[in-house]
Amino acid sequence: MDDIVPGQPDTQPGAETDRDARPEIVVLAVVALAIGLFTRFVTRSSLWLDEALSVNIAQLPFGEMAEALKHDGHPPLYYAFLHVWMDVFGSGDVAVRGLSGLFGIATLPLVWILGRRKGGTVLAWVAVAVVAVSPFAVRYSNETRMYSLVILLVVIGWLLIDDIVDQKKSTVGRFLGLAFVGAALLYSHYWSIWLLGAVGITSLWKIWRAPDQTTRRPWIGIVIAAVLAGVAFIPWLPTMLYQSANTGTPWAKASRPTSAFSLVLADNGGGSYGEQTLVGAMFAIAMVIGLFGIAIDRRTTALDLRTRPSLRGAAWIAALTFVIGCVVSFATSSAFASRYSSVIFPFLALLAAAGCVCFASRWVRFGVVAVFCSFLAIGAFWNVISQRTELKVIAEAVQASSQEGDIVVFCPDQLGPAGSRVMPTGLTLVSYPTYDDGKFVDWVDYAERNAASDPDAFAARLLAEAGASRSIYLVWNDSYKTFEGKCAGLLEALAAARPPQQILADDGALYFEHAELTRFAAPA
Image (tube, rainbow, N blue to C red):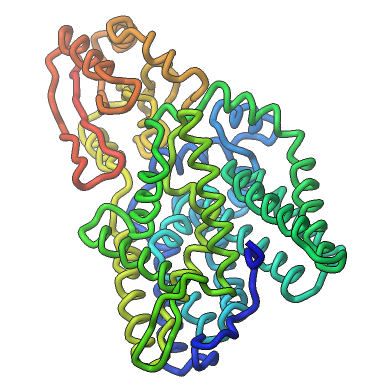
């Protein structure tokens, strides 16, 4: 483990024979940048559950935001940024997604600096190209969530540690900057705990193994910076512990570490389209070559089990972070979502980029980079054209046949945030089982509340409120975890009083967030 640190660029025999990017690599990177800029700010889809819920929470006054997040399950930094952003740019779909796009664009020049330090300008340009068209980076630069911010902060933190360890710039300002970035990460996403833990464990190992005080000093500073980040997080700690005890992840089952890694590769492949598995496999192969690959001559590239020194630290931190997070999640029966891997995405992306340039032949290298980035771009464009939610289409169908005062019911309540955002004005919106307006989801004791809910009683209340003059529109999907049978039960209870009319079918093949629309017309 002596070399498990951010390393200097490779100098061992067999490293890339030219460290300066050739014109064709620069041109390819510029094209990738153009694609990345476009795909980070353009999409056909309206906001889905997580995005709409983020907007609704961020629109609250700062004094109410903390309490809302207590029932949501996330830390507050991104929501505070989004609150200020919406004050300036508004709350339209393009506007609220623009903040994540800005974070994504700000990451790219920093990736170039990292790449240059680890492998010269050839790796710098290829790394920028890979991140620019990465389906993972594009998706979360075009989604109203905190993951693009997390990626940016990780890259900044990596550069600071590289400054301290490899560039020998152990200044107080850099240590304080590292502490600030660590605290910002903790206040952005809880998986940052595992990243800081991995950095802390590695730093303690380096302190123990250091031969002298001079070698030991920068690692001591990194540990102190991590501790300061943790101290800064103490005010939020009671809220996090409350969320951990009462919210959890009721929307999915716990994942084994191996299945979690499969999800990460799939998300790096880009989404539920035909080439997803192929692109994910290409990404995995590129990472392996990036870590172990060594160019013997212009015709031969071999694997060196000692790994590439300049990227050994990146691979170690990514692996340790992922293992710690997955083991804790599985042990606590918490679900894993591939977006959580945003805390290690910069490490994975640089490894994949290094795999593409691990060829001595100029034109072989260019061909590999071009093919890899082309396949990544397929996933990037898929994010532009894919529909994350069916609720806008449902809202248009409601508008075509509804009258002012009609009631729209979201079952389950997870359809409410996105649905309430696009429904026509003048309608009464309610969600099952809480009978609120559908703008929020209270995740506290979620499974218990849903299990105790009574579809028949809910239907009776709806029918009483609708009376003889108001139609009821049921937007429903009975497949949500903890709601098994509840929404179908609500449909049956309403159908017993009024004849149902299916207006739109559930189209799960086209939409990530999908539902069926059934109308119960007012009595003639």
